[in-house]
Length: 301
Image 1: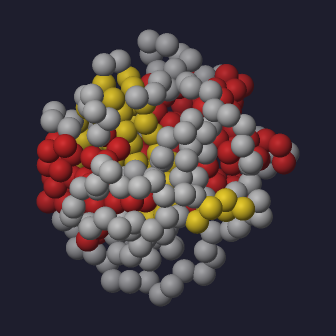
Image 2: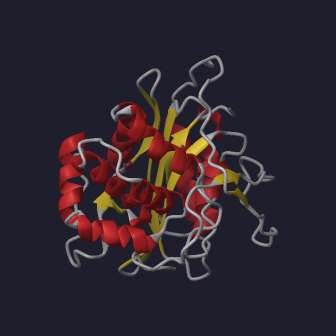
């Protein structure tokens, strides 16, 4: 597993990603020997869907769905800890939830907080093109080098405190043992739902578009070479998503998080946070199979 501050290689900044098709059944764990799928990247910028289809009927809440997520995760990674929340923004309904106030290390999900703070501290005026491209790459490719640069520029843990105050986050706190380890920022499934609600509806349009489009075009292969299509992308095939993933290690624990807005109208917020010990590196495939248990709550779109 990777530490929270690895340095990524420089790549193209403005991207269009064609997501690979998933062949996994919604209730089956992915095959460990499945061939790697390539990601198609073009240099022309592309925007997210702007005209959503007619609204579908609201899914019924299912407390059991979150329990199923934990069951599947622990079947593959015994003893794993899991935090889950799925929220329907249209009906203001929590569709399923499990330990939503339990704190987990963010890993690279904190890059979303970094991006929000950069824009907010600039009074929501978009920065110059170079910095916009840095934000895009940090989110799309989960670039650690850019995250480290902006973390220091924005005052380290102080940006987490500012974001918590800005968005009303109740249990999101900066790292304590090593202030430079931004991935050890701690948050909860419930707080991340609030963050994604803020991205969806609380920001000026230009700032929203910059962040959302970067996450909508998340590259399959991150800057450090990790396949970041675990969880939401491969576990919820046929859905439209804009994601920020996290992976790494915190102390003796491996951490894998999948978070995002799901649906062509960004209707659903999906958060699955996990920690565990997996010597054979099954955390990513486990969280994909676990996230698949939420398919009935998030219609294909």
